[in-house]
Each structure stands twice: as structure tokens, then as C-alpha cells.
Figure 1 (cartoon, rainbow, N blue to C red):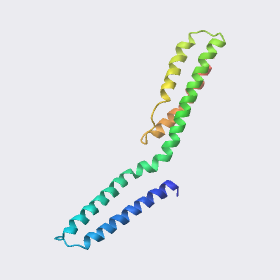
Figure 2: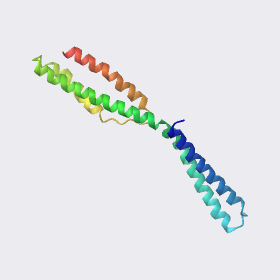
Figure 3: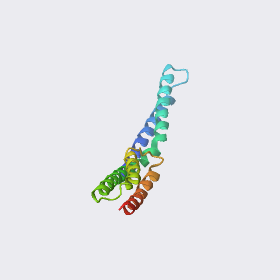
Figure 4: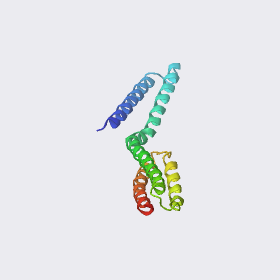
Length: 146
């Protein structure tokens, strides 16, 4: 079991223990007792914290994969932007037709813009696959323009 899962389980168990302790405190008092209302409010507070924590568990479990996807996406797009810049420079260095710039500049601008995309939990896998597929497009751009 990974450290993320273990950390989540520990936090969840701690909150459950706190709920159990607060519940036991509530049961120690009669409904007419003034302390009952105080303990009941504490029980509701810790219970709502438990429920809120429970809602965040899927995102916490997906976070390591999301971070990996974010690195892949960021470096893929940066690499492709660099390839685009090199291809533009090679058009001029190799004295090719400058009409290739019409094809290469939009590719370069698009890849630079892609460097700044956010990778969220819901779509991180799609963005990762898209970034990997981008390498095929860059290869085609290189083959076509050179």
C-alpha cells in the first residue's frame, strides 16, 4: 500500500475515532442537560469534518497520477515548442522556401500555448495521451517541412 493510501486511511481512522469519542460524550448526558447541546454541537462539527474529508478521498488518491500526467504534458508541449522553433530556424538556415513558415509558425504558436494548460484530476489521462500523440504530429511536421 502506498504512502498516499496509508495517510488517507490514518486520517480517516482518526476522524472516525473522534466521532466515536464525541458520540460517547453525547450519550453521557441527558437531553435536558445544558452540556448535551454543547457535546451534540461538537459531534455534528466533527461528523461534518468526516463527511467533507470523505468527499476529498477520490481526488487525494488520484493526485500522484495527476502529477505524473502534469509532468508528461508540460515537458511534451515544451519539447514540441522547441522542435517547432528549431524547424523554423532550419527553414532559414537550410535556405528552404519560406512558405514552410506558414505551416510551422501556427504549429509553434499552438505548442507554446499548450505549455500553459492545466492538468486537472478529471482529464489528466486524456491530456497525457494527447501530449504523447503530439510527438507524432511533431515528427510529421519535421518530415514534411524538411
